[in-house]
Length: 181
Image (cartoon, rainbow, N blue to C red):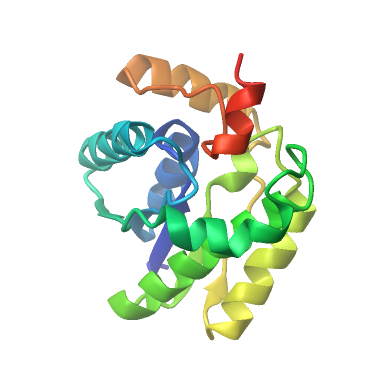
């Protein structure tokens, strides 16, 4: 059964496996890269270029969202100094998934998924809950998968290296740069 799905893409390396698997399942996938949390702008551009490269490799559509760091800062302002994995991250996930849901609606796509769950550093239960809430609020279907299962993360590392994709060393936000390396 084929259906249109908007895949929220946090970065190209993390999207390699989810995007391919959804295509293999028969979905028409549009990747949506929204990186208003990413700092600096040159990092955003570098990641966006690799999303474009991956979409061409997969023969799939992609949309690069607007870079709106002030909107993101407003969304997380009450927890700017929270540690990585703390109170700021759920607000960031919600901001990203809300932007993806709005884009899905504008494109006439009724189903949303995310690549966030490929990372071994992300709380999948939290992502599942936030994604379900955002989709319910926007009347969208939510396709939740834990992409890191079945060696997904390991395979994404291998595939991104094979494709020459940039593997960043921090989530993207200015506060996570201090954890780089």
